[in-house]
Amino acid sequence: MSTSVGDRELYAGRNPSVSQLLDAAKRKLQSSTFGRVAMSQSEVDRLEQDALGVLRLVQSIKNKLAPINRIPPEVFSLIPGYWDECDIDENLIALTHVCRGWREVLIGHSSLWTRLDCVDAEKTRAYIERSKSLPLEIALCKRGYSSYRKDVFLLVMSHISRAMSINIVGNKNILQTFAEYASCPIPLLRELIVNVPYESPLALSSTLFNGDLSSLRMLKLTGVIPNLPWRNMSKLTTFELYHVVENKISVTRLLDFFVNAPFLCDIKLESIPDSSDAPPGRVVSLPCVKSLTVFADRAYSSILLNHLSLPSGTLLHLGFDFSGKESPLPK
Image (cartoon, rainbow, N blue to C red):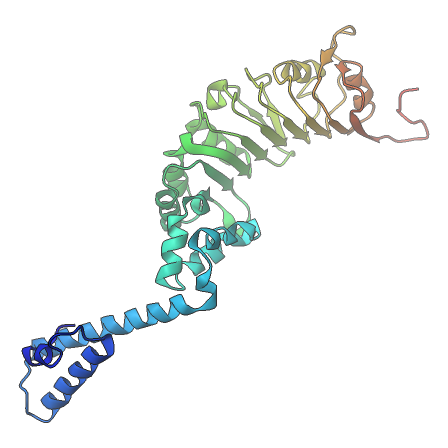
């Protein structure tokens, strides 16, 4: 807001305060109201915009004086990290509309915008832009109201090389669609979770990510038949395999996979069909295993354990389904 020559003469030799300048503007408006000072429409419009700008600045100053805004920005930006993951997106976006200060802090904290759900195009574009070059956590789901959209999926796939975590939930079609666009290596990938209804199992192709999962730390598969082994799984520490249908994965293929993942620490196998195709003398060493969980039909656990060498102190959880009075537990 500017002052007239008369206003500057009034405050000659000193810097006027904001209150004094506003008071001068108020007197000028009062003079115009009573016809003593002529003002054009453009001057009135400009003065109105200046006044609104001052009001916005005053409101911003009031916001900064609020107790919560005394928290340092670098500390404030950490608060969303403690929310439940299922609520963080909605709450995070709402916080960016509280005030300009909060918006600047939150948008400037790139790690808050790395979760992509392939549902809303506008939201996904904003997240990709605000995440800058950080690794991404990608969720591709087809259940209930959170079903993914193909156009948004294609937008996300253009940044697949930045994926750190991929979570796929749905049916055969969604996994096949993903596989079509994910044949290239993903060097940052740490976690891969695939959950497909086991009533209609689908083979997970060895060409996925060009067969290179050398960066993977955690692999969880439900209702998926992995074409094992993938090459170079030396960094894999957690492997979970659930609900594989009859005769679709053998002990031999599983042992081959373990050979390529020598540093596994935590293994969980559930509803794996009985198979004893492995040569009797074959034994695979898993020197780093701390926990092995097997819930399987019949005596699958005993068959598998006959082919594994585990360190002393390994925590074993074994579960069996059997009918009749005779237990399948090895004598």
